[in-house]
Each structure stands twice: as C-alpha cells, then as structure tokens.
Image (cartoon, rainbow, N blue to C red; front, top):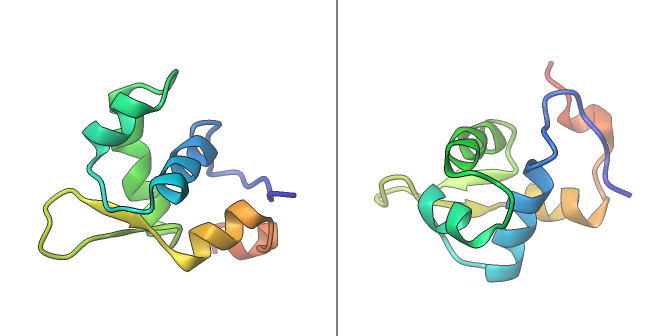
Length: 88
C-alpha cells in the first residue's frame, strides 16, 4: 500500500505512474499531454516538488526534463514508510 503524506496531491501518484510506465526522461508538457485529468500547470508545479522529495530527479543537461528515481519506484511499490516521505 502506498503511504499517504501531507505534502502530496492526488495528481502525484498519476505523475509517478506515468514516469514508471514510460521509463524515459520527460518534460512537464509531455507528461501533462498524456495524463488525462491533470492539467499542465499542475504537472509543471508538482514535478519539482516530487524531485525535492527524491521521487523524481531533474536530468542534468536537459532543461526541464525529469525521470523517476529508485525512491519513486519504491513509493509506487509501497516499499516506503510515510515517515520517510514527510517533511523534516
């Protein structure tokens, strides 16, 4: 079961799932174009937040591109405790 944490929104799991399914680096525009029901401004705002918490990472040398991390995969698999994701 995936932990519920206070800083996350209902869009975050959908964003992470899309990254895991595609397994490529993408900018917010590509992600929002392909996720139904999540607006581009939401995706653009949430991706840096997910990166700040280690679930995504910004790709160096590729402006605005992100990819899922092992921590993000662990979150989706339900292998992280909620305490590990809460703000310190």
